[in-house]
Figure 1 (tube, helix red, strand yellow):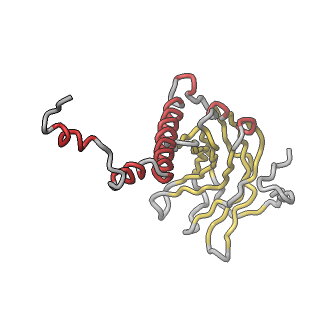
Figure 2: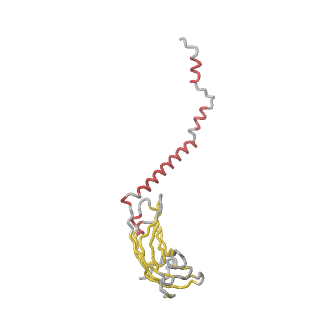
Figure 3: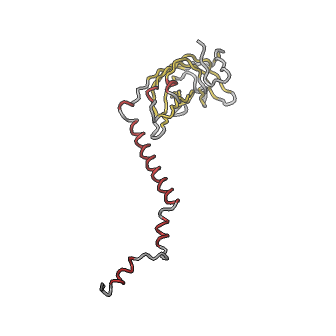
Length: 217
């Protein structure tokens, strides 16, 4: 049948020229590196989305923590001068009870619990000394009640510790799997340091292999 003179010229571009480099360019979009990049980007996007949702669920009302605790002085065992550091030094034991189990849910990694002694009216504007700490990694360990000895002596660099009113602060910091860390203070206790140096010899010996000795009843 007769065709228009320009039909062949119009049809020619529709025929595929296998010598053209275009097929190789299209094939590179389906290479192993392109596939790997797609999989990696999808994985990161899903991981980030699920992490954000995991963190957001910890703010639901049924996961709001209600920690309880009490702390107070048990006994001051000595008040001496550390001749090496030229500081006042005090060793004490304390009564501690806490229930932090409500802080544990699927986004909780661990809790860092610590005891701070604070006092004023010295050459320093602010005096805060950490005298004990503990890391809780399991819900079963979040409940405790007993008598403990400080890990780090209470020291004052200007030898102004005698006669001071000291406040004990029990605090903890949450360390989530993903999200923001925050700090809470759950208990306080007050005591007064004596005005004279002394050593009563009642500091219990630390059991071998134990970092936080219990005070004998």
